[in-house]
Image (cartoon, rainbow, N blue to C red; front, side, top):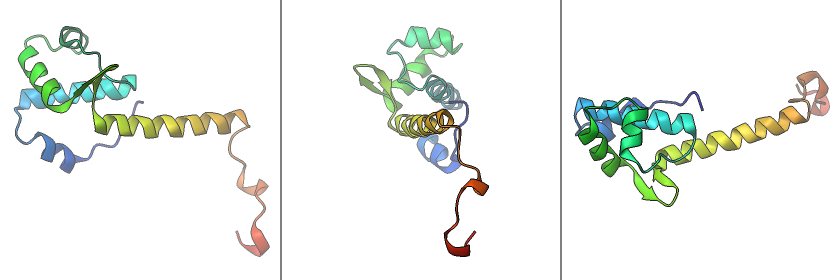
Length: 116
């Protein structure tokens, strides 16, 4: 997933109480989550290295503890999970349409009794 809608009000409401550094760490984490379309590995050292967060390990652990849930397959974020699921469902539908030759052209669709 290379694009997602960013709701400024939701972001501000969720992050008003954390520091600028924690917001930056959180933003990198959710961007990585969306890019990989799966839960984050439950390995703060790996995430610090992968996201170039050396020197911010304390902020990283704080953000992970507050905003992510530990599960059997990694660190989950309910809002990210919901958006990734919707994206993957839509992508699957688009692949199926493409396999059938794409969407029918408007000229190929028969309009009911004079309506266009």
